[in-house]
Image 1 (tube, rainbow, N blue to C red):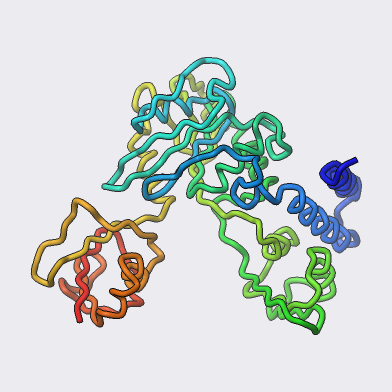
Image 2 (cartoon, rainbow, N blue to C red; image 1 turned 45 degrees about the horizontal axis):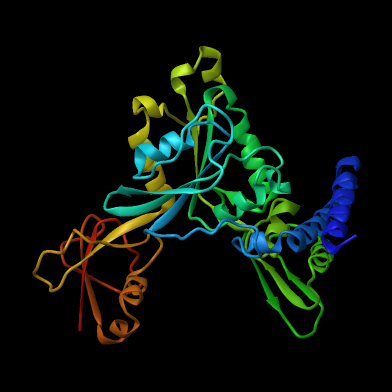
Amino acid sequence: MNKEEIIKMKISRIEKEIRDTPYDKASEHHHGLLKAKLAKLKDELEGPMNKGGGGGVGYAIKHSGDASVVLVGLPSVGKSTLLNSITNAESKVGNYDFTTLGVVPGMMQYKGVNIQVLDLPGIIEGAAGNKGFGRKVISVIRASDLVVLMTDVQRADWLSVVSQELYNAGIRLNTRPPKITVHKTHRGAIQVIDPYNSFEKSQVIEIAKEMGLDNAIVQLGEKIETVDRLIDGLVKSRKYMPAVKIVTKMDLAKHQDLKKLPDDVLKMCVGQDLGIIDFKEKVWQGLGLVRVYLKKDRSSLPDKNEPLIVKNTDTLDDVLRKISNQMRDDVGKAYIWGKGARFPGQEVSFNFQVFDEMEVWFGR
């Protein structure tokens, strides 16, 4: 029995023990330790996949454009049809499962931004355990900037199945990382700083040890509500991604189907162009990108044909460093125009956060 088989056997045993152990106040501590052991073993097993698809398990994808988006869902929900409608790709379309056996890229242009869209093989239940191209597909997802979850109106319940498979693979959708910092030390064992009294310190210490920490300061920067969130904060391999949920083939919807649809899904019928514009806007918002227009001098108009694409959390200092690290040392002032400026030509600090369609001039 090789190492991988041994780890899989251990994982199976722990998962069974978790299922067989009733969850209550008395068993809460034990459940936490079991989940910590499980997370560590899964990290060992799926290490290459969790690091973006190395180790020979992923598809070889050349990323291009300003951001990358993956279409993920059950087989035959219309991913190829959507890709062909919004990009320059030509993905094979069929009415049978697993039409797409590889990864088909296309480029979607929206608001002057080039967004690479990847049509992946359909995910099925068990993908996290490598069923149906699972590990290869998940490796591509982890290396992308946004995931589009797709199903059709007759299988709307499967959105939760796909979400669970990604969760099992360590991907957290539409949520932020817990505010937990770990400072490794040379000695002193495990120290816990938890001003919010989220857990008993002994429980945090035991879970940290199960995660492989020997000497460290574990600091909780917010109230952590569950053991799962605590473990997420201690595991380096978690991937946090924005997601857009889509239900397709709305032309086949019946009244009872509509009642089952979650409120946060985008309803589409690609063949009738229903929802295409809304889809592009949701992707844009999910990616959190903004366009920054640079001015050559203070009184000139900016070149709006080639905006600088940055994240909406970036500052003008980030913008400068993206242009050139040397330029950052040569300029001393920044002036901005646009909807986020108090008045045209407002002088701001380099810590000022960017906004969409900001115009900026950097001067000495």
